[in-house]
Length: 541
Image 1 (cartoon, helix red, strand yellow):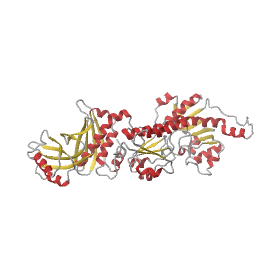
Image 2 (spheres, rainbow, N blue to C red):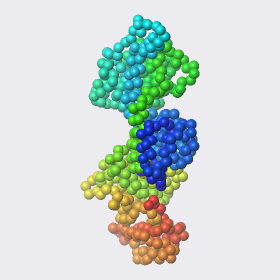
Image 3 (tube, rainbow, N blue to C red):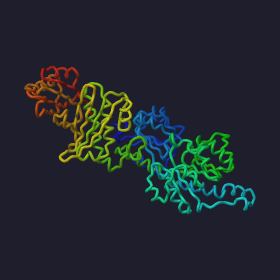
Image 4 (tube, rainbow, N blue to C red):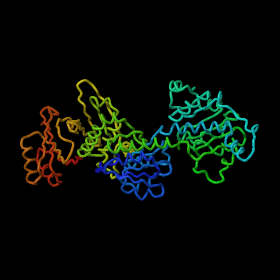
């Protein structure tokens, strides 16, 4: 299962564009024959032309223009969770897998969140600066305790949950808002799940731990601040775009917000003269919440391990632009991905007319599996016959959608079903149905349009459909022999009963040859009164 096809599995070029833990670099270097280039954000682009994998953190911006410079690129690894610096749509269009390391720096960010809360409550930066300047202002820096205060956690993902665990140690009352978390999970965390307005109204501290979407951009706005308690404190170690900075500046100035601790900004670094930075009750740090030695080691090792696993075995863990599966799931599903892709390619050679629908039916044990990657592989097989853009398991569903090609899936696991995949390609001229299975772990064709005929789904194949009358097999041997085309295998099948009373039975043949059969020879094969169709099919070995 590769994002972009690769014929040099044992020889990879890994481009590390930003600082990465030494242990992570060593993981790549331990792979025999892999070329590991350690570069930096200013110089990495000169190595893009022949790299298979790109590792970034947050400084490098992976745009469509960057992707265009990397025609062999198969995977981008983000050592961290946020992928705002990667054009996910452009990567998907290019068939490049993007993966990240969610949770790798969760503890670091949670600890920074609590550090900002404590610093705001006790005015630690101001007290330190005052003391170092020779003053002793004990009365001025009267603080507040976290104990007994209400913390509103917006987003109960990996980081939000770590914040909750640490805030409980301070005996805070914790409420949370997250539309994708069940009340039971919240209860298990010791969090009262409330709607957003209730969180605004009840919280003494509000901490943000969510991604940026159309719904969450500028979530903390003038209207939101108006709903909050007088003297609320805001912590944002998530994304700067979640906060309307002009509205926050005004709320800090009015005292509505007693203090804010920000590790992130809408523009990083903030532009000179940003009035928010002049607020005396603002604590600001330069996007360092996840920057601990321990966290960087963890995310570096995780992304390196994930990328090695993907490049060697096709297992996509923590994929951002395609559904990810576990190594155990991939072990079961992986071989069927090849079956589906080759069935799709085979059907595309046989079908006539413009495609409208691809229907995949999974039978036997495979019907119980997660089949999204198998579906994408079947679509890719169909699409690649007519596209200059390479389709694969990353981008096939999207390409199919943009071209108006619909897809359906059926799962059938009734008694007596053998493990197989049937792929139907519906065009404006009819339906081509091909079925395949695994035989000794290799993809095999088992049926074409309901006629049983077993053959390898690989190599140079010639497909023929004919009336089942004497002389056709001899004709095939004569034509191929006369044109010096050597037959490697010959598989036959025919209808078990005529399609209508008195009709001649239909038969099919699959001829595997040592080389591709030229169009001229195909025309000679078709020049027989009983032959209805003769087509060349080229599949990967």
